[in-house]
Length: 220
Length: 278
Image (cartoon, each protein chain N blue to C red):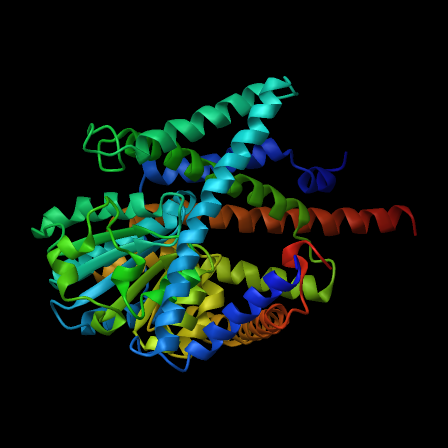
């Protein structure tokens, strides 16, 4: 029962969505049913976000209670979650500080704390990339040499100073790079990856719909 | 330690210092270099220009605050472009972490420059969980997926949404993304509903989307801050992306110099090692 019912639900839902592709009109029964299914999906998804909040609260609260190593950081996590979430879900009719509009607590925390912190974290990558490129990017083999040379000229081409430098050489190097590297070699490889991934996703979906793949239920 | 070994093993803190200086110096002493326009950006600009004036379009904020330096100039430029053409703009996001807030902030900052009014000229639908369901569902009815806008107002009360039921009323979609949601816009919305669309994405993500441009699924592409700078130039509105080109240029050149230096040191010390131990 615990296996059959989820497999049956997965089969019916998957089958319905596949079939509904051919019945786009809302007026048809299948079309209407699939639209309802999509709405349910967004509602159920909303609850999974809530589940995430409950889970992260429970895990962190237990760690704080037990005074585990780094518990003080978990206090910050908990305070941050609720400082952002609670004023955001309270109705703005109570106070302009509630809700998510401009001037609210949520907006202030997002604009002046969350956004700069995330941008800063991401920006520090530039330092690590520069250091890693210097240490690890070595022309040890023919393949790595091709990669290194290609990466270098593309990096030059993608910035105005580099492009100005490339234009000093005879021949239209920037156009060559765009035509043969980005729209040639790169495109061919990317297309192969995209088609391969799509085929993989399609076969995995089929396995789930047919009940062959059951790992999503925690079973092999 | 030999000279070449020293060249090969510069302390990483010196590298960090050089990167820091390469970022800061161009902002203190800005230097202008000509920014050439790539065909993909030109195609995007021409496609947006070809959208009939006053039609309804979507600008999608599918990026996290972490990539704001690259992606925000694209969405800002897109809003300038659409508002200049008197288009009605619907914004939304498939990113829970900040997407709707960025859409709200950016749109409300630019709209007054063109005397645009919320609800009449632009609407922010906000975020809904599950992008596949959201993108598919909007094909039948936008209201069934987004019954309210980002601030909780029923969309039936927004005059702009009176004339918009589903993708049939959307003339163009401008997707700004730093992740794979752009793939779903192509495979669900463009492939199944035929809505013309373009994409602005990070420099790291751009190579993947050249194939969609060649296939005609994206009518144009902005790749990274350079793509955004090109778009700003085409719009005659140079802003943050053009300003950032100096720093990006120097950091790219620095990384190239470091790679060359590292390799010179590597080969020289390897040759010296061979000489010592034949």
